[in-house]
Picture 1: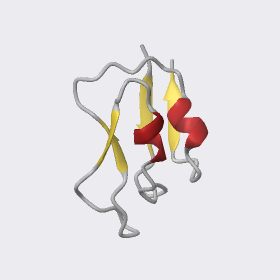
Picture 2: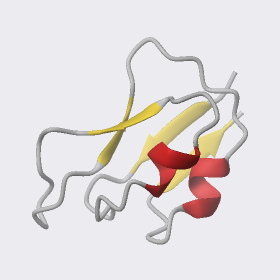
Picture 3: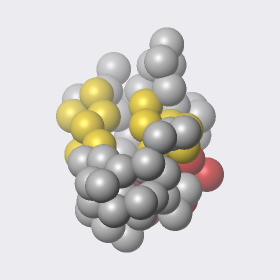
Length: 67
């Protein structure tokens, strides 16, 4: 089981992570960050496998995955 940490202020809301997550663990937040973007967030109740696909596709290096 993995754990995802998202730096909300680095995220620019491109949604690549939400598209490529094989388990659908990430969604776009309804609130904006300090830069005015809607960042991604971990969907409550989901189980992350720790595959780190989200971190690899993130162009802003805003996601860290821990196994």
